[in-house]
Image (cartoon, rainbow, N blue to C red):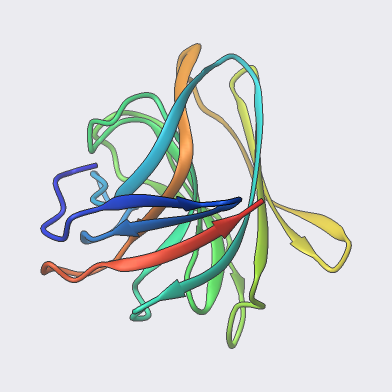
Length: 170
């Protein structure tokens, strides 16, 4: 998304997916990242376990995303994990900046971290697994349309052609 300088890719090995992404990040008025996605219609439940982000800097993030299209400034909800926090960023209107949830800050994120995103109608809820309980991070009402793109993303979070690898499992 957004034509990052560093080439993105997806590698599947068994039940493991490695998403490679470059770019300046997600969360401003437009996103620049690698995004492995599928189109779904209607409600959904998506889960993934983020095993690691390799080659990271503190601005690197990876996680789950739902968006109305692959245009860089589209409406979207992003459940992002960085080396120090877990949070949601939501773009309610195409071309607008995202709104950030209150983050769960950590000295370091407890790896691996299990993530979940659900949509029922226009209501998108994001979670992470803390111990044996799913903790709600954020719930937003976003008019994304009936058919949406859901998937895994990774971004370097800074200028240049450097990329990061995010390893996900089920």
